[in-house]
Image (spheres, rainbow, N blue to C red):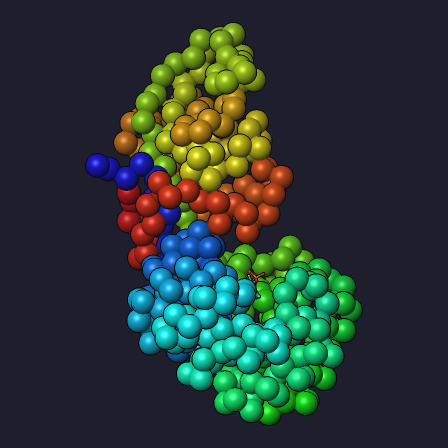
Length: 357
Ligand SMILES: *Cc1c(COP(=O)(O)O)cnc(C)c1O
C-alpha cells in the first residue's frame, strides 16, 4: 500500500543540531530519545545519533524504551531517566542500561554489575533524592563501585528569568562537591541555550532543541533547524457549492463555489483537532486554509485555482513557512505535545529533503 502520510526526517538537520548544541553546552550529549524520539521514530533517530561524534549516549523514560534501545546494540550507553520497578532492575542491568537511583534502598538493591546515575531533586519536585539525602546515596553507590553519573533537572529553563534554575544548579553543585568525580548532567535544551557551558557538567540532555525547536526568546539566536517535515496525500478533490457547509457541524460554509482537496491527515494521526478554523497547510506552492472541523482521518483544504488532485502532497509542517510551533499555537498546545502525538499511521523516513512521497 502507498504511504498516506510521511514524516520526512532530515539527517543533515539532526546532525547539525547535535553539533550546535554540544558546542553550546561545552559538553557531550546524552540525547533524549524518549517517546519515540519525540515522535520522530526511536530507531531512525537513535541510529543517526549513535554515529554522531558529539553524542555520548541516549536517554529514555521507560524500561520498555530502554530495553528496545539496548537491543539495537548501537554501541552507546543507554540511560533510563525515570525509575524502574524492582523486578525490572536486574534485566535492565543485564542489558547494560544505566539506572536512575534516588534512595539508599535502591542503591543497596542494585546488582554488582549495574551502573547508576544518581538522580538529585533540586527543585523540580518530580523525581530524585533531595540534596540532603543524595550525598549518602551517592557515597553508597561509589563504595559499591556502581556510580557512573549524577543528574538533576531544571523546572524553569525556557523562560528569560533563570533565577530558579540558578538556585537548582547551586544545590546540585553542593551535592557533587561531596562525591567522587563522575559524569554530571543538568541542562535540558532550554538550559543549554540559556546557560551555554555549565561548570563541571560532562553531559547535557537537550531534547526538543535537538529536533529543531527553541524557546521563543532564544529562537533567533539558536540556529536550529526543524528535523521533521510532515506531508500527507490528497485523496479526493471536489467542488462545494456556495452556501454549503464542510465537515462535522458545518462550521465553515462556502461563500462561493469552492474547490476542496481532502487531505489524509486527521487528529488520529496527531494533528491537533483544536486547530480547527485556524489551520493552514502548504499545497500547490501556496498556503491554504483548512475548511471546517479537522476529522479523525482527514482534513479539507481550499484549493480553488490550484492544480492539485489525488496523489499530490500537502505539507502540514516543516522547516519552511509552517512550523510545528505555529501548528501548536493553533492547537492551543506546545511543540512537545504535537511532536510526541504524531500517530503510528504516519510513516517515518530518515534521509534528505526533496524526496517526495
Ligand atoms: C525530557 C527530558 C529532557 C529533555 O528536555 P527538553 O526540554 O526536551 O530539552 C531532559 N532531561 C530529563 C530528565 C527529561 O525528562
